[in-house]
Amino acid sequence: MRKIEDREEAKNRQKASNRAAVAKYQEKFKRVNCRFEPYLYDRIVSTGQSVNSFIIKAVENQLKLDGF
Image 1 (cartoon, rainbow, N blue to C red):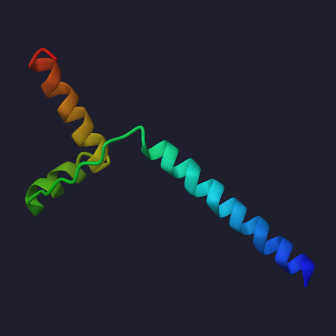
Image 2: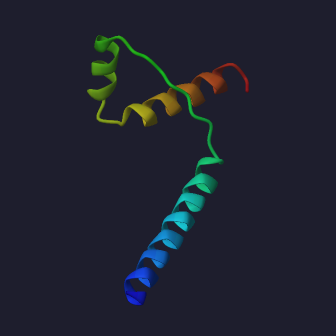
């Protein structure tokens, strides 16, 4: 029984350390939800980029144009 308990305890420690690592990583970012009409979403997807990548590049380009 002790070996099973040891494995469960190790598994729980690993889960806790994984949650902590994920939380630390996510602290580096701000999350923004964005809604698109289907035709815009389809146009973005047709570029071959991920939607997230497309949005980030579009925002960076606009900020440069605006002088930020």
